[in-house]
Image 1: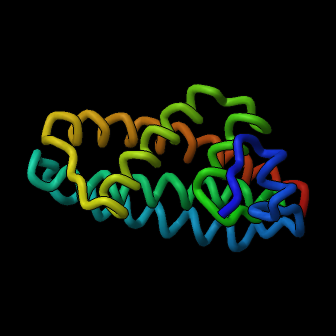
Image 2 (image 1 turned 180 degrees about the vertical axis):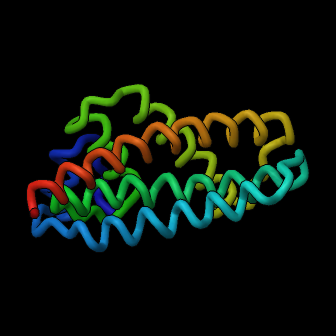
Length: 151
């Protein structure tokens, strides 16, 4: 994989491209993420399961971001470039910082088998919940605007 340091790099290296908007697929992807979150809310969060909660919240957050990208007709092939879109195109530096932090923590789990300690995991899950709620509300608004344009 070629190194990317910006959204422009992602486009040049073909890790992202612009195409057709797909509101139906965006709504479906967002709905899947929301169902996962609803499932998680029925389970008690503890220090021993916080890693698993985090991984699933991160996946839901990523899906909600992908839903937004689908609305805009953007296809992104990796998590790094999703982050660069957030930072460079949306100009949401705080969202990028959190998302990139979550991405790195997830990579530590998935690729290196490193679990977070209970305190870090609990704090990370809580921050991920907050960001997921913010992004979901924003994407819901974007979907509504796109549907109004189509009607």
